[in-house]
Length: 209
Image (tube, rainbow, N blue to C red):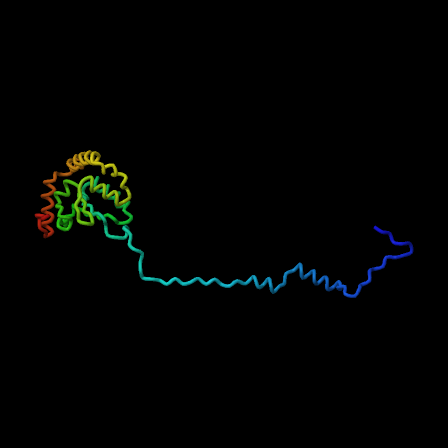
């Protein structure tokens, strides 16, 4: 730092023509530090977003298999505890209402409305009717029922002839002795009782297929 000459005092620098005044310089600096109010407010306001209205149509989504008619009608004996238990399981799994269950133990059951399957035939062996009117029995009926409720893997092995043959034999044995195992009368007695029930209801006791 240079020292002042003896006897000479530092004097403030004199303004020259064209120099900016301190007040104008301060205002300019203040303008640089603080953004303009009108600019800031302009960016705060946004245009409202208007969503295009979607016209409502009366057309519905094409009906899926779950919304259609039942794909399979199963004839079952509600007086059979094992049969009723399996039907309850299938009904709980049948979220899409793909199965229809018809109780052959009902005296009003008519064979003509169920593929021509009489009460006696349905009692000897499980029957099911497809939506095309085809009557299937035994393991084939079980397999189709389980496929419609998402449990097709249970009976998938029976698609092989050898496995299906063994499964059919096992089922036939159970079907033959199921009344005895459940402590129920023989089929002949059940047929006689059914005729009396139908007669009391004013129905033809001799059921026609």
